[in-house]
Image 1 (cartoon, helix red, strand yellow):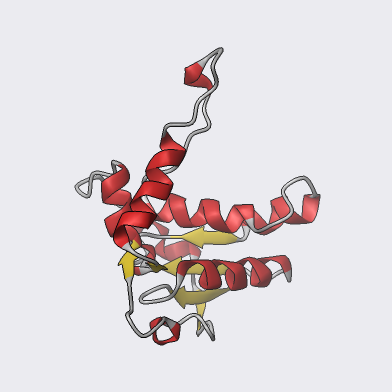
Image 2 (cartoon, one colour):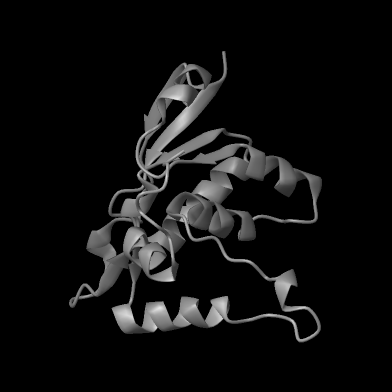
Length: 156
């Protein structure tokens, strides 16, 4: 029976959190991340929205339908960030991406059988308390809604 590390992303700083999840995946551990929409991004709301909206407008001059494409759902957004923190061209990086499973809120009913042995784990040094005095941040759900994610979509 496969063991999975269960990690809750609620009130965790996105960059710090994803880097430590990527490291665990590189070490060969299987990781399940829940509550991805409650992860936070530090900074002012205006700066964060401008940064990611600017990325959506990038396209090639010859064929704008080619991309790059940016995810709008919180789970795929977080998975994409973790993927970019791994060595993409090497086999060990590609296998590490397959060991990471990210879900928007809780694990859906149809995937419950897959995770028989879950080990709850905490990620240190990624809490919201590490933010500055002003505590300026937004949640990943807020950012994804602004980018075009429809919250009424099926969460799977």
